[in-house]
Length: 223
Image 1 (cartoon, rainbow, N blue to C red):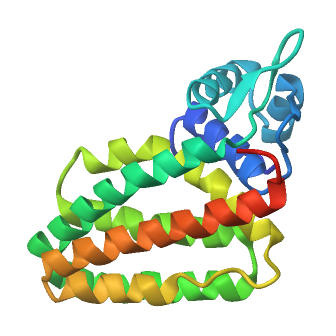
Image 2 (image 1 turned 60 degrees about the vertical axis):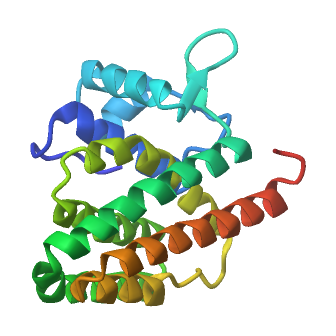
């Protein structure tokens, strides 16, 4: 972990740093969380670490460890499936509204995000691939001009990062989603709300099928 700079609130930065460690596999399911170690690695006091851990516990990323303390919670495949079902509806709404309200901005600014995503895949960095995916979807949420979409998606993205990390770490050749993203962007840029929504729902549905099957194949008996 790298020492943090003062940008977002310190608690949010700590939360993101811990989640990145979980998504990258450095903190594995069942692994104990040591507050003092995290605080030392991030160069912060224990208080923001405690607050960040409390948030991550409420989000289901962490759970109570036997005896005392916290540990990384295992991923539940049923929960993952439900999460993607909800995501499909919210993403469909976001892409439809983005197409209806901000097609010109999508045309002007979207291609750079597609290029960044392809470069992340080429780099092989799990962290970069997850960040690029989140940046693209976050861009669309902004274009939707619905202020409830982003906050509603925050919890889902917390767990989506874990799912993506679990799968991407095990794939020698990561699944390239950027052709789908490009098609989504083209629908938004053309102002075609119905097509954008349909493609978005399909995109999330395919992602769910792929992620759950890959996790089931790896986890075996975990359901």
